[in-house]
Length: 300
View (spheres, rainbow, N blue to C red):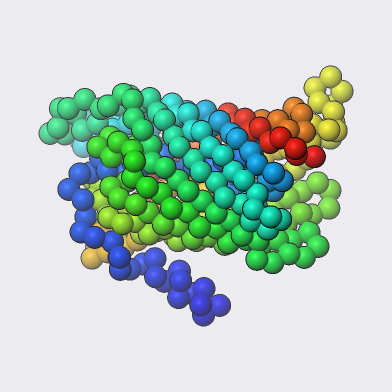
């Protein structure tokens, strides 16, 4: 517990972040980055990859940020449609590695009306994410994992589509399979950014991250799906606690999501989710929609 407390406390210090970027657009407003190949939850909940998998995620984001004065209201990114392509591979029975790359189309005001009249770029390239997960403990019905992720700034960091520099994230994951077809997963960790960004009245930098979700297998409904489709209802809450540095506070968005996931074939899984920000914070959208398809040859 002392070691865990020390790790979490480290996130409250800008130890290896550089001076804040002078470009307030150098952030990724869309915090939803589901792990590729795992059509289950919007975060890595320890879902298995038996061989290797390819996935395509189609996302819709509505108003993840609002700026306003007494006379004007601005949405720097009003709507965004994203195609994220990814792959995951099993490394033995206890580890997986994955890669994810997003491509987006967006519309919005940028800073128009607030002193910067340049138009928002409509087509943007997101940041490349490289992840790895290792199972570190397992008992009947319960597993504990550690996950690491490196995000590289290959995207358009002038239009809210990518961070100013790299970021590194570490997470612990707990997964519990309960009687009656119920699975509960939770994760908590830290994210370190290579450079902080001053965005409006918030300093986007290091942060604590956490999420909890559950899936429940719905009994077969004749004419809609059979037992082999393994259709599951999902619900989750995902949140961030931003760092406080010299009186500057980081964004702390909270979002809830529900959905359905299932297998059309043993090797083809489909998931649908909708979500909504639960507070008025940078990164908490008014609405989110996601359709994900994963192809895993050799899966049983």
